[in-house]
Image 1 (cartoon, helix red, strand yellow):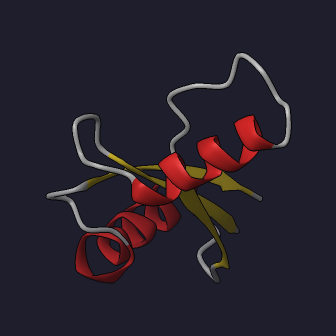
Image 2 (cartoon, rainbow, N blue to C red):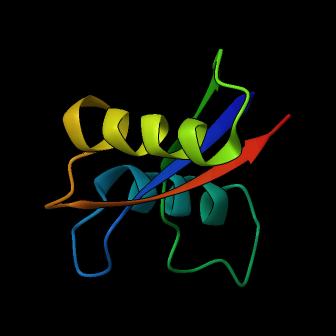
Length: 80
């Protein structure tokens, strides 16, 4: 199964990369851009054939390594 994990900073956590991207977009003439938040996406191929087991494994990976639950939110999508 394939797991797609999207990690973003929690609301209220400063996002200097998002601010830099926002400034660059405005500098390039893209009007109406605000509140840019930057994140990351991780895709994994898992050997589990059961969706619940694959989700549980991806959840454990996020808690132990992939995300910082103090500062970041994450979502997990599982596909065959």
